[in-house]
Structures are given as C-alpha cells and as structure tokens.
Amino acid sequence: MPQTGVALFVRPLFDMATSYAHYYMDLAAGYAAGNMRVIDLDGNGATKANIFAALEGEDPIFCYWNGHGNADTFSAQDKEVVMQTCHGDESLIGRVVLLLSCSCGIRLAPDAISKGATTVFGYTVDFTWIAVEDPATDPYAQGYFEAVNAISNALAYGKTTQEAMNLSLASWNQWIDYWAGSADPYASAVIQYMVHDRDGQTLFGSTSARITTPTPPPPEAEKIPISLPLITGYALAFLFF
Amino acid sequence: MAYQIQKLNRFIANNPALADIPFGVVRGRSITPREALAMLQRGEAVSEVVAAMSAAGMDPIEQDWALVEDYYRRLLQLPGPRPKIYIIGQEMTLEEALRHVMQKDAAGQELLRSYQGLTREMARRMK
Image (cartoon, chains in turn brown, purple):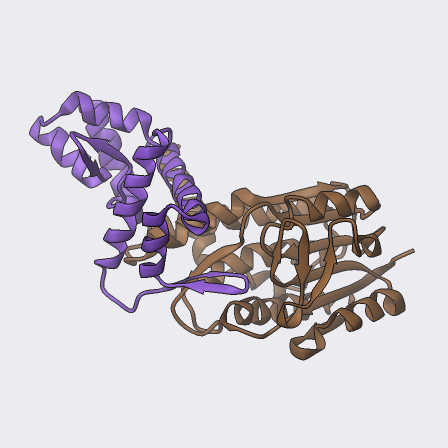
C-alpha cells in the first residue's frame, strides 16, 4: 500500500531540454517538501534501478517524473527506458503519477490505470515549449513549467486530483492571457505551444484521490505562480464581459 | 461590416501578440487580423475577409499547411535572439521547424497541429 505523504521526484539532466524540467521540478520538490517526505532522484541518480529501488523501499503515493517518452515508453537519465505499455507500469499500482513526458498519455497512462494506478496525469501530445536562455532566466519557459507544477503543488497540500487538474488548467489559461497581451515578438509562439500542451494534458483514473491530508499552503509558497499573469488574466476577463 | 471591424479592433487591442498571425486566406494570400482590419476599412474583398473570419480555425488542411508555412516564415523575419523549440529530449530551431513544415514530415505534422491549436484559440478570441 503506497505511503501517504511520500513523493518520488525523478529529474534527469542530460541535454538542454531536460535542463528546463530539471530546474522547475526542483522548485516543485522544494514546495512539496514543506508538507511531504520527498525522495528526489536527479541527474545521474535518475536511473531505472534507483527508481524501482525507491518504489519498493519508500513506496511513495506520488510520483512526479520527467523524461523522454512516447505513446508506449517512459525513460529517464540518458533515455534509459524505465517502463513501457504492458511492462513495468504495474509498479504504479495505487499511486498518483504525473508524467512530464511526450505522448505517454496516448497508451502508457491508460494502460497504467488499467493495471491499477490510481491517477495518471499525462500528455497526449509531445510536450513542447520555446526558450531562448538558460532555465533560471528564460522569459518564455517559466509559464509552461509553472502550469505543470501547479498539479504537484496542489496535490502536495491536499487538493484532489481533479482540483489539481483544474488549478493547472487555470494556470495555463492565465499564462496564455498574459502572453496574448504581450508585445514580445515571439509571444505568439509561446501561446502556440501553451495551447498545444494545455489541450494535451489529460487526467486518467480517479478524480477524487489525494496524496496528503488537506493543509493550508505556506504563504510564501502561494507566491510561486507569479502575480502578473494572474492579474492580466483577470483583467482580460473583465474586458471580455 | 461595422460589427466585424469592431470585433477585429477589440481583438487586436486585447491580443496584440496574435494580431500579426496568419489565420485565413483571401484571394490567394494569407491574412492576419491586422491586415483583415485594414482591408475591411478600405472596403477591399469584404465578403471574403468576413468569410475568412468565420472560418478561422476550421480551414481545410491544404490551406492550413500554407498558413503554417507562412507563419514560420514570418517568425524568421522577427528580430533576434530567436528562441528554440524544445520537446523533451529534443530541440529544433525555427529554420528547422520551417523545413519540417515544408516537407510535411512527422515533425511538420506535429507543428501543423500545434499551429491549428493557435488558430482555434484566435478564432475563440475573435468571437
């Protein structure tokens, strides 16, 4: 029986693309650690052996994993295959899983649910973003990863899986509103891929599962979604109605 | 027509990032919301522009290929630094994106799908 209040983060780091999720998932891991016990496998530690050892030894109820993927495969550091449709996903039984990985929502996530995973958040598209600078300073990438982190952040403080999904979708929409009002020359490309990722984000399985008991989030953590898109989103809503 | 002009004015004011994105084809060339507004204000090809606005986000596939190609050509004319497109485990430049679109290969089809998502979002905001 997976342990409530325990989370396993997997953050490979082997190219520019993984460096973005690696950076932003570190923020989510830190946030979750305020209310959960977090096991964090990052960089060269994000191997298949370490992942399965953590699943067996720590039995986390929540898994937030990044890695290259496709409809049938999830991989970790250096594209080492961790699980495939019909092979390995039985290890997710009873867990709530967020797979930040291309196209795993097409077959792998539904297959994991059929094996007994409680909930899987997955993408039915190749998760895509644009960026021009390193992760910590890039102006474009932030919104993509904050919208995904909204799922983890909500779950970590006791929201249900559906509430977490709704908060994430709200975050995507706030960021899309923000960029729609921007004069940045590449704002349309940011929106293009935000719409793509938002529409491909899918919740499989239970909509009422929780990974911790509900707890008020710390005030400083509530600041993680930056205020500008929030204000812009609401402001645009007022303009429309 | 005054209603369409009002809608486009409001769209451009609220969504400046989307004002120069091709969303439809009129008389053989792609048009953006800003160009559509100028055409309506000049009284040029009014019925075609209005039809293109109504069909935004629902264009036939061949037209969408032409639009997405034009879209990436326009992105390549913008000042740098140019962002890269990242997919977990991969990255591509805007030049490579345009090549994939022109070749209509698997990556080009994925780019087309995301562009269609953008034009659907534009159409939703134009309503």
